[in-house]
Image (cartoon, rainbow, N blue to C red; front, top):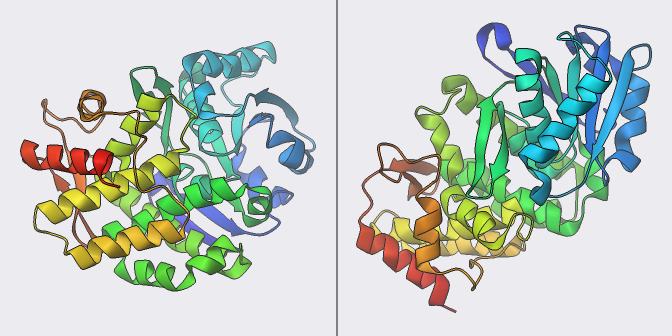
Length: 361
């Protein structure tokens, strides 16, 4: 097991990474202050992993709420299901909410914990690669709105993150690739040596080599933890983590939540960000081709869905959370390994990128 920490002063918390961690009560119990725990999971994950978590909670009063699986259920209505479970079981403000699942479950459970009785502790147990390397770390919690992804949420940090790498054995290939999109992001925005490592080890990751996966998860979490410690509420550097996300969220909202996996949309959005970076003179064509090649090897889409138009992208991006004073902020690449927040992108060049992405074979 490897342990990192997100350094937030008196809210410092550990990220435990390794195989066979779900049944280790000693990793969970120190972070449960009271005697009540609600496990939030979904219909896919609960049959596989709920029982080991229940065993680790033996001696506490613990219940579970099982939600439907899919991005399309990341809604206020589903969030209310969690509140109803907490109230039906008469859980008090000293209870702990435990998120057992992927990013959707982590976001929902975290937001429920942030709101219930004005805030109760919660723990993240991410079971997908994307959640283990990204969404479980850093305290972003949210649900979607029909007009925009993750538009209703809160910054609310967990007590700990428990990333059991054994859970990746049951992850569908498509979900594994989606997680790699977020892994690749860290190399592109701030860690060129990691990007070069990924270029050498991508096939091992796709083959689920345990050593390679553990290394990728640790290096991704280390990058994320450093950024969150420096900029918890995304007033500056943390925005770099949104490489590909402004374009990607437009894809997810435009085609309907759940049609594209989050990582797939981020991959296509990253390609668009690389294209725009090249048009601004920051990336060489050789660097752009490296981005394309790595995402292709990761079995990720490079093109947005053909059903969307440039107008659709501009309309959906106009309600992105990164809008500031009416101005769209995009995360682009000044170089490989060097992300940049761009607030003054020329509209003509943005249109060229959108048109290229939607019409170029």
